[in-house]
Length: 318
Image (tube, rainbow, N blue to C red):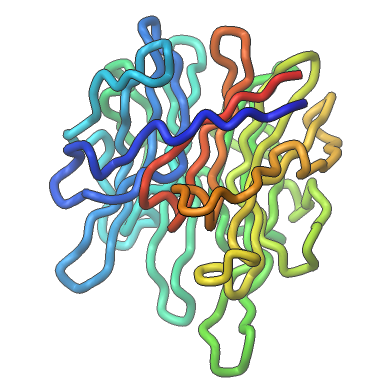
């Protein structure tokens, strides 16, 4: 498989989003529509106490995947109530057409005291063709459990083999680089299945991909597409420490393939992109999303500063 970079296609700073949201279009996720492509993403609002919150939004493209038809300036899903798992943010929102429904699998996050954050995966449904979403309940459908004790998030769901399949991440531990350092998280990609897409089988903390850069490798945001007779997965990975300021430790893109959604072969070279000096993605490439458009496999992904400057597009050819 060969990869062709097609460049940055959306910069949130050039558009009017929710009030107070001027940066970030993180984790682009697609919904095919009759007249184009809708891409959901998470943007940020700055709070008066110096913190931020993550909010889902969308941008609509024509079939050429270049021409922008409009962006959402309304709230498509409010943050969770006081004390709930998604009180402080929703990032990402992964959507799925299932029968007559449009489902959204959310990652909700909330601040903690001893560590910075914890997360869970929620389920929302749209009754107006993806303009807004409503929760089926205030709690997560997948969260911390006996063998996946923290940081359950990044759920991506597809239907295959008469079941729903979710690829997601779960935290294994928090670690410190030095005794004085703040704790950093370590998380891996897992897989679970469901009959109805609501209640999920326990996976027992099983990881599906080998580490490439050591036990403290962090794997994030799996995305899976069927193309050319097999399943393809894009994800991103990084070092647990120093990733915010050291390009060598920052997020980069990973790839794996499978014939059955259970057994995966990792081959990160497929998505390797050499840095281009001064480019929007020269320091980081993260949060990929695979989708098939007009018979061709494409990938959206974020660049520098965890998606502060929007997302770009690549094409994958067999």
